[in-house]
Image (cartoon, rainbow over all chains, first blue to last red):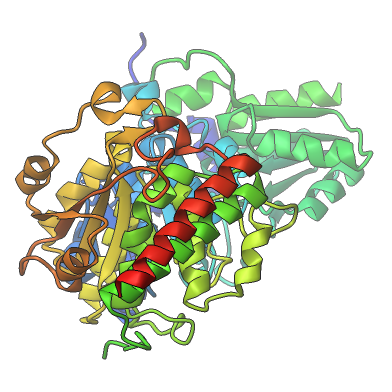
Length: 332
Length: 286
């Protein structure tokens, strides 16, 4: 096994980020925790529920500042979701925060029944999602969560790409009267948006216009798509980049527009290639008679390679270089 | 302040008489639906009768009052008993019981919030207690006086989530929470002791930090006494209600196959005849 990658970005990718004017922010999880604390200070009904996860959820400062608004349930994810649902049914605006791998697998039945079926305004926050835990292995990866939750009625699924989206999503979830699932990684993220960008759950954000290839990406993979578009521009190709932060309800109009206007579509996600954003886009296109060269980039259905998140991303082509190559192949 | 919506004060005798009528309704509803959970419904019916007529400050008039008591039926499969009691309390017309499980009916074979008076959607086992902890915590956070109740099956206790919740309820000193165990000792496969032993229940709950009371789950005076107030300040209350599965119908009592057995027309007639006879006897005894 090679040593873990030092950085998520190659020197060339960093150079491209600089060229595109991207500034490094903090981890989306940090932005979430800070936003939640701000919201909780103005609304005493905002409550955090943790399963021995306040450290990994970056909620230790929240706990210190607002000890009466944080509930610790111990290492018990089923109980975490049930309690979160009960709080929501009694006027609270709870955020159940737990590693996504455990939250969405062990407690899936509680999410389905106690939150979605009972239709309570609870937000479930999957932390260190996807392959954020890297070399800790498949027990700690959540490559199934989008697929599992997409198949459950009555829950919005949002995967923020940067600090701006993380803040906007947290605020939207706190205001919503419906179930939410939000997924965060723990790596520091480049800022992709201007502060004046408008954010709406269910509406993709166009980061870059172009009609050669459309990258439809979600979460922490969006930046790699944006960098790839920058690299492909140097070859004279104009690529569209959509941050599809909301996986459900899906912005089908943006997907169809991309499919109709672009020569190829590449979807990118930190998730199994089965049942996530890519298959949702494929289904949308095909069911509307849009046939376009198409590739899903994600984690294939195999024993996931060992390594840090950055290693795993590069291994499976979730990188500026990998995505550029995928796009070029599709255009051939 | 707590709502008081108990309406007319009913004597033990009145409630026992009512229970006979409710048992008839339950059986007729299951017969109409062609599906249902007969045995467990009959075993918990007296508990529900006491809760909704003597203990819970919930009524059709205060379903949106945030200070109302909360009842979550963790053993959701016994929904026909709950429907019968809610209809009797006026949450919806009794005629709706004929629609249970029918095409496009709101009356699903497990509880849903679409039905007035039902707080949460249940049916998968091991969910009610964690939900009730959230509700009880919300009451404590808001310094509101409502109480939270859940009803668990004894077979249901094999679900591990109950024990996660049992730890948490005691950890948070939730004396506004009462868990009632419908201890009829039978589950779908047979005796609980044969399927998965769970005794001694009282010692287990006590060891988890709960105040425990054991009661005859068909004794109205005894049920009223233990349900009317928390057992001990600073501790959640566990009521082990010893019950008879299929209670009230001789050929259904203590027979596992009636867990979700649906009576045939002949069996229904026989059951109703038994209940009618019991009613006459009760009226004579008054």
